[in-house]
Image (cartoon, rainbow, N blue to C red; front, side, top):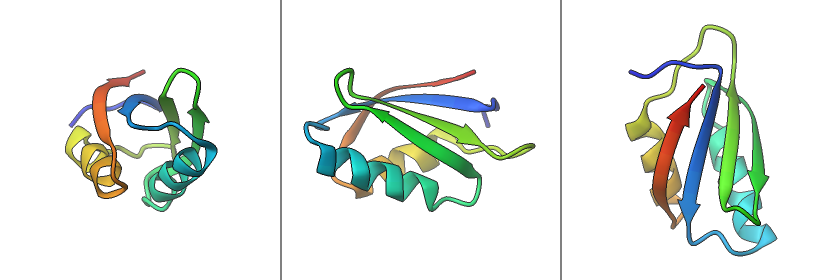
Length: 77
């Protein structure tokens, strides 16, 4: 499982503030996620993880897909 304190997700289909709010809420509901920031203009979501926590690409993809969107790319920093 990839590790990193910050994860950047490129999301397809995110076009409005309502979309962004829903994705951020779904991601922050995950127990490993501390915060989610959405850059609607660039269609990116950056999440910060709690200390010593991890989240898999499969989990992130499932959360985004369940919200009705798709993932272009996930990068861990």
